[in-house]
Each structure stands twice: as structure tokens, then as C-alpha cells.
Image (cartoon, rainbow, N blue to C red; front, side, top):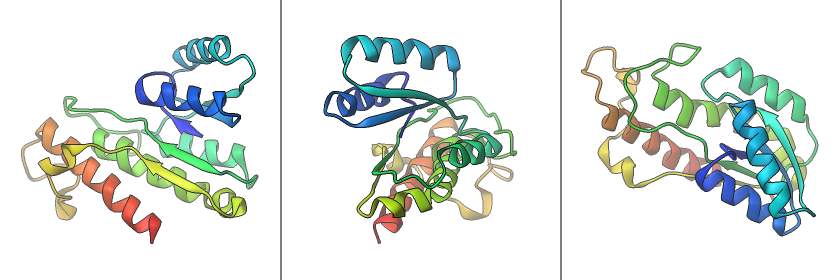
Length: 173
């Protein structure tokens, strides 16, 4: 499973996995952009086993539905790639600051929702795409949603990327 597989790093990751024999689920928020990416990938890797899955990381109900649809079938690799960056203040469907909610909480919920599938694979891997943006901010645990401090897109992004890095460390442990 590759989140945000309709463009950028996610697209190229999914394409290369398919070219090397993996069965790949493109987990995309936009059905239209996901279908377009799927068609481009099928043309570039006609032997690839590619399917499109609907996933909105900014909506925890969507995350739960995606994980439930996958079920407990073994999952070898989860690439937590999708994200938003340096956007104006917005909230997820569940009321979290959008960057933290999408970039970290959505992926955390996805990984935990797919835990049985990852465990069933025996030697599964979770890849959390982060960036040097983590250096912009620690996680401010008592104000994750910028309720008491001024919202700054770069700090919000940095906080989400710090959370990605900490999640990767803990998932490895």
C-alpha cells in the first residue's frame, strides 16, 4: 500500500514496486487523480498488479474503512507517503489541525488499523516519508492544534514531520 500514489514520490514508489513484481494498492484521496495515475502506471508497467483504493487521511472514518476493506490479508509494505505542506489553517473532518491530522494522525491510524495484516506478513515494513522540515518544530503536545498559539504553516508542518520521525522510531522498536 502506498498512500498518495497519484503523484510525486508516491507515484514513483508505486510504479517501481509494480515494475519489480509487487502487488500495489494506490491509496488516493481523489478518485479522479487516482484513476489517472493508475492508467499511467498500467501503461508504464503493463505486467504490474495495481489497484486503486479510496483513502482520505484527513478523515479517520475513511482510514478505518480503508483498513477494514484490506482486512487481515498479509501486507508486506506500507508506505506512508501522502501529505500536505505549509497550507493555511484548516481542520480535518475530526477537528485536528490539517497538517498534523493528515501527515501523522491519519498515517498512525492507518498503520494501527492494518496491524494484523502487517503482522501476518511476518517481516513487514512501514516506510514513513518525512523531511528535514522536522527541524522546524518539536511536537507541542499541549497545543497540537494551535489553539493557544498563533498558527504558522511551517511550524505546523514541522510538528507533523517530527511526529512522523518519532512514529518511525517507535514502530521500529
